Length: 314
Length: 311
Image (cartoon, rainbow over all chains, first blue to last red; front, side, top):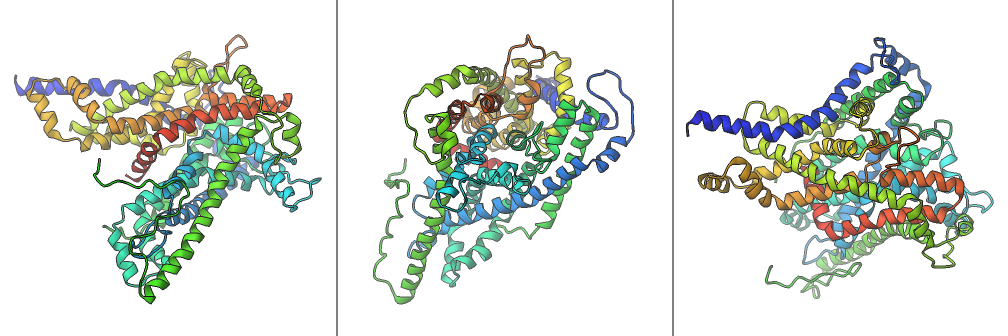
């Protein structure tokens, strides 16, 4: 067989294997992504086949849209607090699980039953956000039947006749949602950080212990710098999750596609969906999609740059 | 198997005493008591969070056995009867159908995802050709973008294909949106497989296609299992895509809600009908299979997810 024929056979094989996956991916993922940019400059309603090019009108309108600006602000708040709280808790637990055990001859070791903790903490991660919505909807019920209110009345901390209206309280609703995200995420990042911690050679810890380093010192001077890459990645992932929030907000809070009370829990994705499916403003919704993408990109870059450190090889 | 017997610690059991733990010098003792205090301290926090995870889930399941009045009355009440009828009602009120819909879609979408994802990843990982890197980054970059960026055109795209509220439409969309992660994961997996085996198969006269299906795929089994479980979980729990694509278009259209969507539907419905035990039963029915899958494959799931994220 000549080389040419062989080469052609190879290319045929490559093309054959790539065709179906690539075609599907281009049709349903890439092409819609690209189209969004185009539609964002039109006044398309989605109903009529015709639409006009309106330049940057949609973007100008977005700047003036009070609801969208509020939503943007909420996303930014979540963007700071979701990664911060989740990563801190996950790091704390990961350190406890991996190095919180008794010291002594064994050097640094995890607590007993560390396997058990890792399994349990991961539970929320396998539950769908829909289940989370039902669960936390019930926990945050505004009467005594809610787990949180029932618990607090049981402890005598709140009056049974005036339970807290968690999800209807303008100043509380966003933080209630934050708690759900943190509850959901901590286990995953605990496992992630644990894996990273375990890949650190034991003798580094032992050397630190021999040099007389305490737990806190070991954590800040040894563990954290070695984990920095994972922390960075996690911050980006959590940031992307904080940009979304659609399922929880739209199903747990009041209003068409959520966002209530009175837009106090509104996020960009819920405003987008309402404009698209309820108000029939497809072009406008596309402009929001583009803003979401731009912010995701900017924030990923900022996170990666701001947290950049000298990479430590081991 | 290692010859050394492994001691499996029961959940919550304290770490076994280290051999030679007794009789140490003063300085060592100081460190030991610090370790001891820390052990109690860390267990304390760990136990509290573990309770915060498990308690709400048990409480939710218990709600299925309560009466509606009990649920509204006090959160801390114990169910007065242990009838399973709320589960039956939840099943007939739609959960059964939603369950079936989700299964139908996943039976096709997961194997297709695995097949197409592996095919693309294999070619990209092991055949150098012009544009290889470009196509790879093309595939992988999809994971970076918010799905909302595509949602509006995607809806009209699926509509144009006349596949709104059809199983095949959702299957294709699921496969497409699972590509970035699957290709990314399998790509790194195929790269680790030894080239010698490939060469041996070529000398034996096997075609590229044959090598892929009969040599490479079986060797990639551990990777396939990890990424397969991940795709099952991801597609089973997907909400946004079905919420947009699986709405009945006319009143004559059948409801083909996925389980997640159906559960939210049930949440609205039961809010009006005030039959909350049904909602709690429905959520429990949706929750249990996932917990079972997770507990059976927890090692692969945790390992797979972390290796995929850390790479």
